[in-house]
Length: 182
Image 1 (cartoon, rainbow, N blue to C red):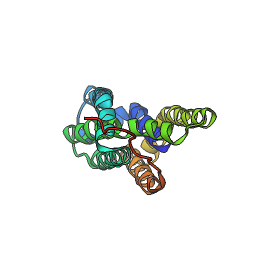
Image 2: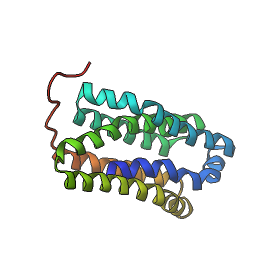
Image 3: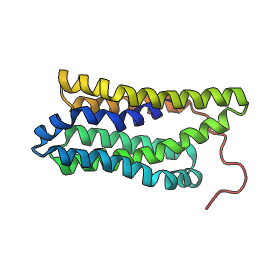
């Protein structure tokens, strides 16, 4: 649930900090808008391959790998001295991380909640977290940008990812049943 939250948050929090980021990185608003668009395109373009890799590499491994890449991307984004590094951290690394960690979330929910009602609650919780993340992105991102710096939003994401990695140790993965996909 937290994974869907943080990925949805990442998709919406930058919009309120565009001017601040552009000023801080010595670029224009258009360059920052490209970073936001590249994040979305990277994530969307790699979501299906991320799902296939989940079948090949395993759910927990792919989930953890996605979290690590995403978290490192958040740190790179927070430390970005210029637009190119922001593209690398936010647009590419967080986009790839999202594409790797979101498919296992839904697959793990499907295999761990077999009863219709519990599965519906799991998917409802995941979907609600996505909506809350998207709604809180501009609010929290705007607050952090105004009160501290736009970079604090990336640090917050890195801490949430660290929390998810710690909590993910408890995830039960029954494993792939039948022949392993190729």
